[in-house]
Length: 284
Image 1 (cartoon, helix red, strand yellow):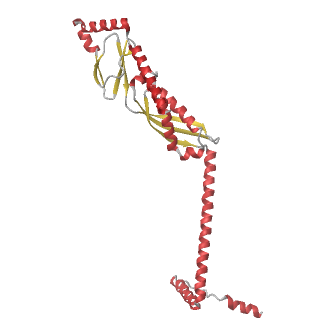
Image 2 (image 1 turned 120 degrees about the horizontal axis):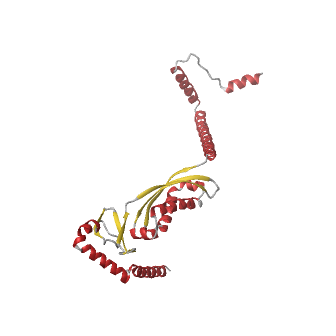
Image 3 (image 1 turned 30 degrees about the horizontal axis):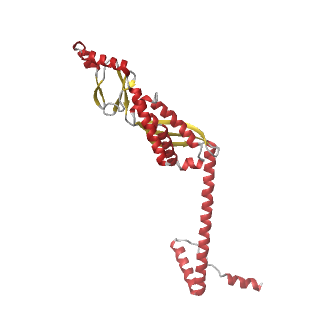
Protein backbone atom coordinates (compact mmCIF):
# COMPACT_ATOMS: atom_id res chain seq x y z
CA UNK A 1 0.00 0.00 0.00
CA UNK A 2 2.82 2.40 0.85
CA UNK A 3 4.54 1.66 -2.47
CA UNK A 4 1.30 2.31 -4.35
CA UNK A 5 0.78 5.63 -2.55
CA UNK A 6 4.38 6.66 -3.24
CA UNK A 7 4.07 5.77 -6.92
CA UNK A 8 0.80 7.72 -7.15
CA UNK A 9 2.45 10.73 -5.53
CA UNK A 10 5.37 10.53 -7.96
CA UNK A 11 3.00 10.30 -10.92
CA UNK A 12 0.96 13.24 -9.65
CA UNK A 13 4.12 15.27 -9.05
CA UNK A 14 5.42 14.49 -12.54
CA UNK A 15 2.05 15.46 -14.04
CA UNK A 16 2.08 18.70 -12.05
CA UNK A 17 5.62 19.44 -13.26
CA UNK A 18 4.53 18.87 -16.87
CA UNK A 19 1.53 21.14 -16.40
CA UNK A 20 3.75 23.75 -14.79
CA UNK A 21 6.17 23.59 -17.72
CA UNK A 22 3.27 24.02 -20.13
CA UNK A 23 1.86 26.90 -18.12
CA UNK A 24 5.24 28.61 -17.91
CA UNK A 25 5.72 28.57 -21.69
CA UNK A 26 5.33 32.13 -22.94
CA UNK A 27 4.23 31.38 -26.48
CA UNK A 28 5.16 33.22 -29.63
CA UNK A 29 3.76 36.58 -28.59
CA UNK A 30 5.39 36.34 -25.22
CA UNK A 31 8.82 35.52 -26.58
CA UNK A 32 8.47 38.34 -29.07
CA UNK A 33 7.82 40.83 -26.27
CA UNK A 34 10.72 39.44 -24.26
CA UNK A 35 13.11 39.80 -27.20
CA UNK A 36 11.93 43.35 -27.82
CA UNK A 37 12.37 44.19 -24.15
CA UNK A 38 15.90 42.76 -24.11
CA UNK A 39 16.70 44.63 -27.34
CA UNK A 40 15.46 47.91 -25.88
CA UNK A 41 17.48 47.36 -22.71
CA UNK A 42 20.65 46.86 -24.79
CA UNK A 43 20.23 50.02 -26.83
CA UNK A 44 22.93 52.60 -25.97
CA UNK A 45 20.35 55.30 -25.38
CA UNK A 46 18.66 53.19 -22.72
CA UNK A 47 21.80 51.94 -20.94
CA UNK A 48 21.61 54.51 -18.19
CA UNK A 49 17.97 53.63 -17.54
CA UNK A 50 18.72 49.89 -17.69
CA UNK A 51 21.49 50.24 -15.10
CA UNK A 52 18.95 51.48 -12.58
CA UNK A 53 16.10 49.14 -13.60
CA UNK A 54 17.61 45.76 -14.54
CA UNK A 55 20.00 44.90 -11.65
CA UNK A 56 18.34 43.99 -8.35
CA UNK A 57 19.91 43.05 -5.04
CA UNK A 58 18.24 41.08 -2.26
CA UNK A 59 19.55 40.29 1.19
CA UNK A 60 20.78 37.00 2.62
CA UNK A 61 17.47 36.18 4.30
CA UNK A 62 15.34 37.04 1.24
CA UNK A 63 14.43 35.33 -2.00
CA UNK A 64 12.93 36.74 -5.19
CA UNK A 65 10.17 35.14 -7.25
CA UNK A 66 10.34 36.54 -10.80
CA UNK A 67 7.26 36.89 -12.99
CA UNK A 68 7.68 37.34 -16.75
CA UNK A 69 4.49 38.45 -18.46
CA UNK A 70 2.61 37.24 -15.39
CA UNK A 71 4.20 33.78 -15.31
CA UNK A 72 6.81 32.41 -12.92
CA UNK A 73 9.90 31.87 -15.07
CA UNK A 74 11.83 29.43 -12.88
CA UNK A 75 11.14 26.63 -10.41
CA UNK A 76 13.69 28.07 -7.99
CA UNK A 77 13.68 31.59 -6.58
CA UNK A 78 16.55 34.00 -7.14
CA UNK A 79 18.95 35.13 -4.48
CA UNK A 80 20.56 36.03 -2.31
CA UNK A 81 22.73 38.60 -4.07
CA UNK A 82 22.35 40.33 -7.42
CA UNK A 83 20.15 39.29 -10.33
CA UNK A 84 18.79 40.96 -13.45
CA UNK A 85 15.29 41.49 -14.80
CA UNK A 86 14.03 42.76 -18.12
CA UNK A 87 12.21 46.09 -18.17
CA UNK A 88 8.49 46.19 -19.02
CA UNK A 89 8.06 42.38 -18.99
CA UNK A 90 9.51 41.24 -15.67
CA UNK A 91 8.42 41.85 -12.10
CA UNK A 92 9.42 40.18 -8.86
CA UNK A 93 8.18 39.59 -5.33
CA UNK A 94 10.54 39.44 -2.36
CA UNK A 95 9.89 36.75 0.25
CA UNK A 96 11.35 36.86 3.76
CA UNK A 97 12.81 33.46 4.77
CA UNK A 98 13.32 34.25 8.46
CA UNK A 99 11.35 32.57 11.23
CA UNK A 100 8.24 34.53 12.22
CA UNK A 101 6.41 34.22 15.54
CA UNK A 102 2.92 35.36 16.48
CA UNK A 103 0.62 35.03 19.46
CA UNK A 104 -2.64 33.14 19.17
CA UNK A 105 -5.35 35.29 20.83
CA UNK A 106 -7.11 33.68 23.81
CA UNK A 107 -9.66 31.22 22.47
CA UNK A 108 -12.70 30.29 24.56
CA UNK A 109 -13.11 26.57 24.03
CA UNK A 110 -15.64 24.06 25.36
CA UNK A 111 -13.69 20.95 26.35
CA UNK A 112 -14.86 17.37 25.96
CA UNK A 113 -16.22 17.34 29.53
CA UNK A 114 -18.21 20.58 28.96
CA UNK A 115 -15.87 23.03 30.72
CA UNK A 116 -15.27 26.47 29.21
CA UNK A 117 -11.60 27.50 29.22
CA UNK A 118 -9.64 30.31 27.55
CA UNK A 119 -6.37 29.14 25.98
CA UNK A 120 -3.71 31.11 24.13
CA UNK A 121 -0.42 30.11 22.55
CA UNK A 122 2.45 31.08 20.27
CA UNK A 123 3.45 29.71 16.84
CA UNK A 124 6.84 29.84 15.10
CA UNK A 125 6.93 29.34 11.34
CA UNK A 126 9.00 30.18 8.27
CA UNK A 127 8.68 30.09 4.50
CA UNK A 128 10.18 26.88 3.12
CA UNK A 129 9.11 27.30 -0.53
CA UNK A 130 8.90 30.93 -1.70
CA UNK A 131 7.21 30.05 -4.99
CA UNK A 132 4.34 28.22 -3.28
CA UNK A 133 3.93 30.98 -0.71
CA UNK A 134 3.49 33.51 -3.52
CA UNK A 135 1.55 31.49 -6.09
CA UNK A 136 -0.74 29.32 -3.92
CA UNK A 137 -1.99 31.76 -1.28
CA UNK A 138 -2.62 35.49 -1.31
CA UNK A 139 -1.27 36.16 2.19
CA UNK A 140 0.56 33.23 3.74
CA UNK A 141 1.17 34.98 7.06
CA UNK A 142 -2.48 35.94 7.61
CA UNK A 143 -3.73 32.53 6.45
CA UNK A 144 -1.39 30.75 8.89
CA UNK A 145 -2.63 32.92 11.77
CA UNK A 146 -6.27 32.11 11.09
CA UNK A 147 -5.53 28.42 10.62
CA UNK A 148 -3.65 28.33 13.95
CA UNK A 149 -6.68 29.74 15.79
CA UNK A 150 -9.10 27.22 14.31
CA UNK A 151 -6.67 24.34 14.82
CA UNK A 152 -6.26 25.26 18.49
CA UNK A 153 -10.03 25.29 18.99
CA UNK A 154 -10.50 21.97 17.20
CA UNK A 155 -7.63 20.33 19.09
CA UNK A 156 -8.84 21.40 22.54
CA UNK A 157 -12.43 20.41 21.78
CA UNK A 158 -11.38 16.75 21.81
CA UNK A 159 -9.59 16.92 25.19
CA UNK A 160 -10.80 16.76 28.77
CA UNK A 161 -9.96 19.51 31.26
CA UNK A 162 -7.41 17.30 33.01
CA UNK A 163 -5.69 16.57 29.69
CA UNK A 164 -5.61 20.26 28.78
CA UNK A 165 -3.98 21.11 32.11
CA UNK A 166 -1.48 18.25 32.20
CA UNK A 167 -0.70 17.35 28.56
CA UNK A 168 0.19 20.74 27.10
CA UNK A 169 3.26 19.37 25.36
CA UNK A 170 1.29 16.61 23.62
CA UNK A 171 -1.35 19.13 22.51
CA UNK A 172 1.36 21.44 21.17
CA UNK A 173 3.01 18.61 19.18
CA UNK A 174 -0.32 17.50 17.74
CA UNK A 175 -1.18 21.06 16.77
CA UNK A 176 2.24 21.52 15.14
CA UNK A 177 1.82 18.36 13.04
CA UNK A 178 -1.67 19.40 11.95
CA UNK A 179 -0.57 22.93 11.03
CA UNK A 180 2.53 21.71 9.21
CA UNK A 181 0.49 19.31 7.10
CA UNK A 182 -2.15 21.93 6.26
CA UNK A 183 0.35 24.67 5.33
CA UNK A 184 2.67 22.47 3.27
CA UNK A 185 0.87 23.43 0.04
CA UNK A 186 1.43 27.10 0.96
CA UNK A 187 5.19 26.66 1.28
CA UNK A 188 5.08 27.21 5.06
CA UNK A 189 7.02 25.16 7.62
CA UNK A 190 5.64 25.30 11.18
CA UNK A 191 8.66 24.86 13.44
CA UNK A 192 7.18 25.06 16.93
CA UNK A 193 3.90 25.54 18.78
CA UNK A 194 3.63 26.35 22.49
CA UNK A 195 0.58 26.61 24.76
CA UNK A 196 1.10 29.71 26.90
CA UNK A 197 -1.74 29.89 29.40
CA UNK A 198 -4.98 28.12 30.31
CA UNK A 199 -7.48 30.38 32.08
CA UNK A 200 -10.29 28.77 34.06
CA UNK A 201 -13.53 30.41 35.30
CA UNK A 202 -13.38 31.86 38.83
CA UNK A 203 -16.01 29.46 40.18
CA UNK A 204 -14.11 26.48 38.81
CA UNK A 205 -10.87 27.78 40.31
CA UNK A 206 -12.50 28.08 43.75
CA UNK A 207 -14.02 24.60 43.43
CA UNK A 208 -10.66 23.09 42.44
CA UNK A 209 -8.91 24.93 45.30
CA UNK A 210 -11.49 23.61 47.80
CA UNK A 211 -11.06 20.10 46.42
CA UNK A 212 -7.28 20.33 46.68
CA UNK A 213 -7.51 21.68 50.25
CA UNK A 214 -9.86 18.87 51.27
CA UNK A 215 -7.49 16.33 49.72
CA UNK A 216 -4.54 17.80 51.63
CA UNK A 217 -6.50 17.74 54.92
CA UNK A 218 -7.50 14.11 54.35
CA UNK A 219 -3.88 13.17 53.70
CA UNK A 220 -2.78 15.04 56.85
CA UNK A 221 -5.31 13.15 58.95
CA UNK A 222 -4.21 9.85 57.49
CA UNK A 223 -0.57 10.69 58.21
CA UNK A 224 -1.42 11.73 61.80
CA UNK A 225 -3.37 8.50 62.35
CA UNK A 226 -0.47 6.45 61.01
CA UNK A 227 1.89 8.33 63.36
CA UNK A 228 -0.31 7.61 66.38
CA UNK A 229 -0.52 3.95 65.41
CA UNK A 230 3.26 3.70 65.12
CA UNK A 231 3.68 5.53 68.45
CA UNK A 232 1.25 3.14 70.19
CA UNK A 233 3.18 0.18 68.83
CA UNK A 234 6.42 1.65 70.13
CA UNK A 235 4.87 2.27 73.58
CA UNK A 236 3.59 -1.28 73.65
CA UNK A 237 7.06 -2.62 72.91
CA UNK A 238 8.55 -0.31 75.57
CA UNK A 239 6.03 -1.48 78.16
CA UNK A 240 6.90 -5.10 77.42
CA UNK A 241 10.58 -4.33 77.95
CA UNK A 242 9.92 -2.54 81.24
CA UNK A 243 7.64 -5.35 82.45
CA UNK A 244 10.48 -7.81 82.08
CA UNK A 245 12.72 -5.75 84.44
CA UNK A 246 10.90 -3.86 87.25
CA UNK A 247 14.03 -1.86 88.02
CA UNK A 248 13.80 -0.33 84.56
CA UNK A 249 10.63 1.52 85.59
CA UNK A 250 12.46 3.02 88.58
CA UNK A 251 15.30 4.15 86.33
CA UNK A 252 12.81 5.71 83.93
CA UNK A 253 11.18 7.54 86.86
CA UNK A 254 14.54 8.92 88.03
CA UNK A 255 15.36 10.02 84.48
CA UNK A 256 12.07 11.90 84.28
CA UNK A 257 12.81 13.64 87.61
CA UNK A 258 16.22 14.66 86.27
CA UNK A 259 14.60 16.15 83.19
CA UNK A 260 12.08 18.11 85.26
CA UNK A 261 14.79 19.42 87.65
CA UNK A 262 16.86 20.67 84.72
CA UNK A 263 14.07 23.08 83.79
CA UNK A 264 14.12 24.73 87.31
CA UNK A 265 10.52 23.84 88.14
CA UNK A 266 9.31 24.19 91.74
CA UNK A 267 6.55 21.63 91.37
CA UNK A 268 7.37 17.95 91.16
CA UNK A 269 4.72 15.32 90.56
CA UNK A 270 5.21 11.90 92.14
CA UNK A 271 3.29 9.25 90.28
CA UNK A 272 1.49 6.59 92.31
CA UNK A 273 1.17 3.06 91.06
CA UNK A 274 -2.34 2.10 90.00
CA UNK A 275 -2.04 -1.14 91.93
CA UNK A 276 -1.68 0.80 95.21
CA UNK A 277 -4.84 2.80 94.50
CA UNK A 278 -6.74 -0.37 93.69
CA UNK A 279 -5.88 -1.81 97.09
CA UNK A 280 -7.41 1.22 98.84
CA UNK A 281 -10.49 0.95 96.72
CA UNK A 282 -10.89 -2.74 97.54
CA UNK A 283 -10.73 -2.01 101.30
CA UNK A 284 -13.64 0.38 100.98
